[in-house]
Image (cartoon, rainbow, N blue to C red; front, side):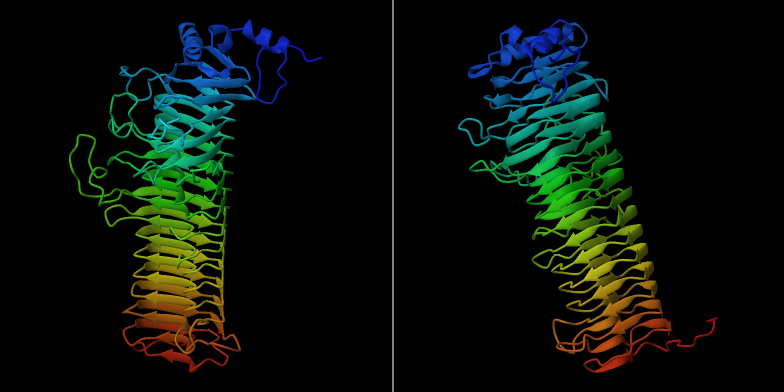
Length: 537
């Protein structure tokens, strides 16, 4: 026989004894406050009465038994409250507004001093975004100016326009073991995130309440969640899973951790780290998404995001730093963007980036595998990049870059490209059956290519591409210990290695160019290359 417990946990059997025991221990059963569970009568007055009772006690648990509860008004949850929807409980939205928010519209609690220490858990939160009268943009769970927020073990379904969960101006926020399924774009919301991490920038960014003091989010964990489609007619999968799309200069979202989530069929970026710092993205699975992970400094072209908190226009981005993308899998990438992309600006470089141990299998519409631009102090290592339609690893305007130990198989374009980069080591990579060049260096200086193995370059067009190609005034390039081999049939590279006459200060030694290519093994037209095997002084 099941015994009463002081605390009901998701997954426990629901018995009369347990319900009554919890009802006697600072827990408020919403049905005792008149909330109807039949799904035919507005239950929000009774639920709100239970939430108010918890507020008046300065904290309690509010319990929602199995049943369907029509939510006809925005619910307000207050500090030190645990709202628990038991298995079989559904909140069914029936108001053209947010489902629940932490606090009152007129409050003025700055920083992280708003209603905090809140747990929201369990149940189905059905936003009904295709239902007549409910199709305008709305939020499900909205949190602002808070600390110590936990949202777990629930499903949010069919959100129109805005977000399933917004964490705005939140310190210590956790979203775990949740499902975000189904989205409706009422128009102009093709960038919406299921989990939005945002700052108290303006009423247009966070409509719940002020003050608008530009407080960002810090110490955010999203773990073990699923993002995708619901199957409801008229809905799609989410455009984006987790991310931000507004910013203020001098403000950052910091210590954001995303782990062990599944993103399925998302239309744009599954994760969009916009003006974040100290970020780890690890152990996630991305399947048939428009793009996987985007790391992005403030976009200069967005004139709202380039303002200081006092409204002064800087017309500039800002540096963002310390990002790790490791141990993720990407399968069947679609046409929106690369599976992994990091984009800085000349006034806002992405610093200290590690992209390691990821597996990428497939992309379409000329999208490659990993693309980096305006980044510095980067490691791209031990990734497996397979069957992408574009370039395996693409870099431009980057410096202090190490690309090592990667396997790039059957890229539709180049294996690795280095465009206008400086202070770069490309070491110990294997590139097989690239459609175009194995490794392409255009411009830049202080580049070291060592111990790379390139097999079967130039498969797209015979006598057109190269195993290693240096061009466009590349300077101070070192080639050592590299090995290039032709395919042996069909289209072949023109040369194993080629350098144009604009390349300067090239040294090469110990490379292996043997094999039969379309034209020849070596085509070094660079200015006075040094090919001695002795020390160069």
